[in-house]
Image (cartoon, rainbow, N blue to C red; front, side, top):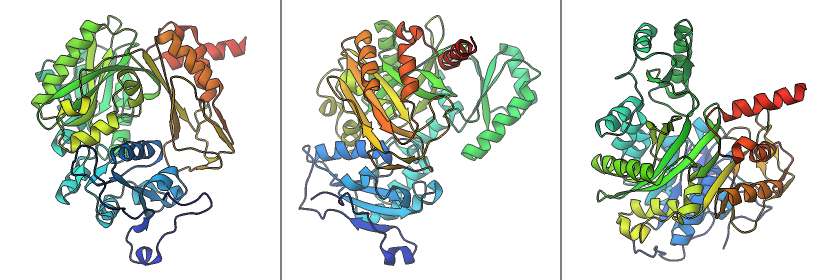
Length: 494
């Protein structure tokens, strides 16, 4: 029996609403105990997220024979995760703080549904160590690293120190938090401009400023401090030497509870706008097998030593001499995880669940990691393709592409509504080819056949990026988008 029909909307239960408790909606009653193929302990998992990642986790759970519970805000009552989960519980109004970020409401939903585990997806509560601790206290398994590891890696300067001590290459930077702009200026003069100030407790480009001269440092330092405090509740900053026109390279890792950590290779994430990734691919055109093996080996030893468990991503900058420098670690599944799945045939979300159940790495991977071909992911956002302004509203037509080597991860559908309250990502288009040339050609074809009407999307932008000569030649770095738009502006002026 499936979820509600197309014409039905899950209703809040008045009794639950009146008591201020999250309302429960059971879409399918259990049909006996359905255990996963490995005879593990999880019968039911709550997904503490929304959109395409919630649907992605539901797919993995269905294949493992695990029942799912979706939580949703009032704005997401008609979403596909609500439709396809076995149960769904409304936890509040559209605002994030009152729904998806409301830890008491999420835990209440988990206890009402009697789940054994919570999968946080990415974003929202995925890297919230306090949430992971609350889960543990309530006897609910958090599908991710232990809270102390999440906390360690979430404090960027502590993460840098841990990696530095393990021999992972690190950019020259401050030894700890910079207390004032005067201290920042003293440090910057030692290593030379340009430098970059970063939020110690954050990521995603917030609380980050590039400083090229001593004169502009005080104002930019204060601006970064204020932004960090507003975004993360912590205005602490640290500093690093700034690398001009770097590539953004990240390594996917998995760890089990027995000290085994494996690296699944790298992803190239250099095409970004304001530190937000737009397009990712694997492998990187600049990575050699020698560097891949060496860095992967160091990471596995380091993360095993600190007790890392579950999925994680270690991010680096690569300079123009192909030297890698650690910048941060994300202790969760990444938006761009499908490109690694496409080239390794490893289901990372299933792996997360199995590792959280206590499975050994050899029983999760069933053999060595083998890379095949080249994969590219384009993030399709509900945004104006050049102004990057959000575009909420009803999707009047939705036709995703198909064919050999094409994958779509999305919770969007025709007549579905994109609410204005959340992240603008509505779909991920992923392709694999036998090599990069075929992957680029396949992605260009798929983008041309991807129809979304009723809202603006970034599909036209991706089509232009795929046609760009520098992109096709693999000449990319984190300033690619700036140069891309500068060239287009010059062409328009002519």
